[in-house]
Each structure stands twice: as structure tokens, then as C-alpha cells.
Length: 279
Image 1 (cartoon, rainbow, N blue to C red):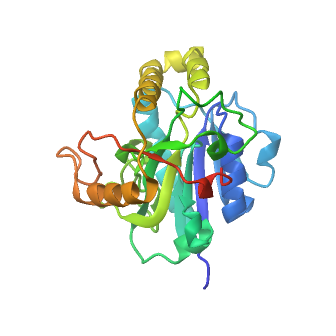
Image 2: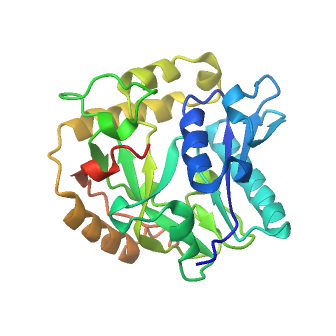
């Protein structure tokens, strides 16, 4: 198989997940195919970004909603430039999001994406990895996350069309592609680790810059999600994933017909051990 030319983009500001992002996508695509934009000229490019395409840009102004939209427009524009330069696919995620192929398929991300049918965009099934407070300790960022966290909320908010195959425009947070449907590819997942650790969330909530930008409400919602999901019984992975992929393919919210929904139902599944060394 001839592999496609695949690029990955993220934009960060004081992000503790960036090293994980660089290590993972660098191993899958090659560091030379990664593009990291630092939001604010007060940011410094860390040494682990050597070999990555990096750029420090002026800080985006506004509250959390406004800056998310600005980021999506910025990333969409840069993706269009990459296509003009010859890219076949562009992945755009936050630094705490990892597009992962099921290890059962014995395929790397580049091989998997290269094998997909030609569509404007592709989605992985969203898996929000949250700390289970009764049994899981503080996260160690130097160790694989999925050795330390074992439950995922199969949440439609993170079933995001993060892979595009031609110039398109992402909506805020890349939760949808404007004017396009979404296609959840079997065997592909978008793991989100924003709520992977309660203590880290509390630290982030106390940062003055995040408070000023209106992130407090968002972070408190994440903390409440951890508490709520910690009380919920987990389901078997493979059968639950199959049901959720079908539900999210069929069900759409009235206000956004090109986004998936689980109709308010919360399905938590135990993540199989086969994933534990990936991120």
C-alpha cells in the first residue's frame, strides 16, 4: 500500500499534554509532519519539539468561546495551505486528544488512514477518559495514561471529524466540519484526556489566565463529570462501542444535524488492556 501524506496540527497555550501529543503523533506520522502553534508571544518552544514545525503567534483575544472559534478558523486556514503544498490528509486535534487505531487491527495510524475510502472528513468514536475516584490515584504524566486509567465515557462530544482530505472549515473546537456530514470509522477512536486527573483540573482552574478567559465554568463541568462517572458502572467495551457507533451515526441533535448525539445517555466502558501502552 502506498501511504498518504498526512499532517497533524495543534495549537497550545501552556499545555501540559503537548509532550504526549508530540511523542504519539511523531511516532505515527514522523515529527516532520507535525505543526504546533503556540498561542501567545510569551510562550517558549520546548526542547522536545525539536524536529517539529513550530511557530509562536500573537495571542488570540477573547473568552473561551471566541478563542475556540478563532483557533478553528486559524487551523482550517493552515490546513488549506498544507493541502496546497501536497498533503493528502490533515489531522487537527487539541493537545489532549489522540486519534488511535484499535490494536486488534494491527495497523498504525498512517496505514489505517491511508486505507480509508475517499471522503471529505473522517471521525473516530469519542472516548472521554476520566479518573475513577474510588480506585485510581493521581496521574503520572511520565507514564502511559491508559495503564493508569481504565474507564472511558463514550461521549458524542468527542466524536469529532478531526481528519479532513481537502480544504474545509472546522467549527469551534473542531467538533464539526461546516457543510459536511461525519463518518465514524470502525476501529478508530478519538481518546480525550482533558479529565484524566481531578487534581490537575483543580490546578488548571486556579490559573489566573484561564480564569480571565472564562475557563472556570468549563473546568468545573469536567470535575463534575469525573464525580458522576465515578459512580457509574462500566460496561463491556466491544459490544458497547458497537452500539454507540450505531447510535451516533443515526442520531443527530436538531440544532446541529452534522454532529452526533447519544440523546443524553451516558455509556461508560472499561478500556481493554490492549490499549494500555499507546498513550
